[in-house]
Length: 391
Ligand SMILES: Cc1cc2nc3c(=O)[nH]c(=O)nc-3n(C[C@H](O)[C@H](O)[C@H](O)COP(=O)(O)OP(=O)(O)OC[C@H]3O[C@@H](n4cnc5c(N)ncnc54)[C@H](O)[C@@H]3O)c2cc1C
Image (cartoon, rainbow, N blue to C red; front, top):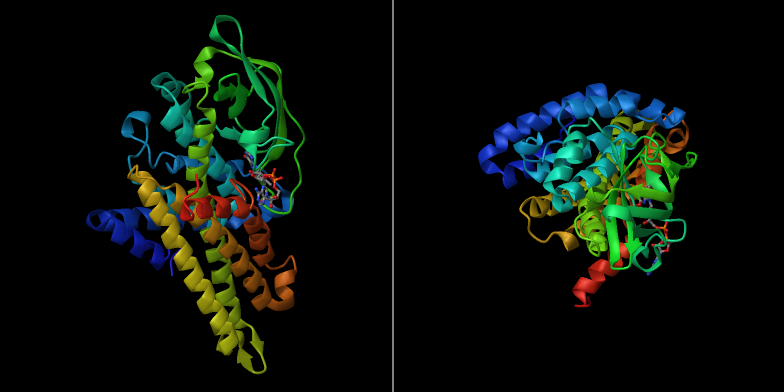
């Protein structure tokens, strides 16, 4: 088995039969790179809580974030599922690295869709090539799932079309490390989105919030005290900001689903290897039918989640409506990853509970996936709304 697994290759081949050899070769080589250069540091990053800067630099050098963007923006012009297959492999190797990249990718996606040519030139090129890093600022201390109803950060128009932002954001990944913050604020017309550079006067971040998993990624609150940004930093149209946030979150949900599939795949592979080594009652664990049944469930669930995730990515890449498919993929893949990691710990027995084994890191990392970019409950509300014909 290679790091790029057969099931991934089969999906990619079925989506892109004419380019199957080229894409699979590219993905296999990216998988080999991730296995050799990224996976080995994952445990230390988790233990020491170090921001995975080196990993990210190496991945940027591979052209990872450039994948779905046109050549004119220094992108590689490849289909979106290729990016998602790479995201899965980074998630499998090191979820702390993957979450930082996923959030960065969500901002790239938003700027690409809603930014103007000057913003593409000034910000997006540097972001997709990894010369600069981005953060996404939507959540606030008293506003999470109900971002539309309870956001308090405000932007008022100032002199010469500039904007003045006041308020606070909370739980922001890549805070303190990012060069650009994609920030949402309320305006008299509704919501607006802005690019706030890190050195803007009045803009600051708090201390790192420690957490149960994804320990290498940073998580902080942001404070805006009369932060002035020029009119060129308004993204798209004032009043449309919340629509942009929604579209960015739908895309982000595909990346979170991919990351979850990667985490689950890592936990399953470690479990299969362990079950072939560990003996009990004179047999390998893998010889017990109950273990086989659990492994069969893991593999089926992972492959189902992967298909849902890559399909949502295919729709997004084709510019078709992918919103419900993204929510379904996120709901299924994130809950699946938690279940798979839970069984992985169980099959590892006492060893699985110790710091010697990696499987509880995978469980701790997987847990966030059911919360960030919209909780499982919110995914169900959106999916049920569609099923029941509600708006
Ligand atoms: C590690 C980490 C990284 C993050 N990174 C970012 C980031 O980069 N940028 C950013 O903007 N945010 C980020 N977040 C915030 C994250 O997106 C929010 O935590 C998430 O959207 C949930 O919001 P909340 O925490 O306010 O929970 P709440 O909205 O307070 O929800 C609490 C619980 O109530 C449930 N609930 C809420 N409303 C309903 C309802 N109508 N019906 C049923 N149940 C409901 C929720 O599902 C949840 O279980 C991050 C969070 C974490 C922990």
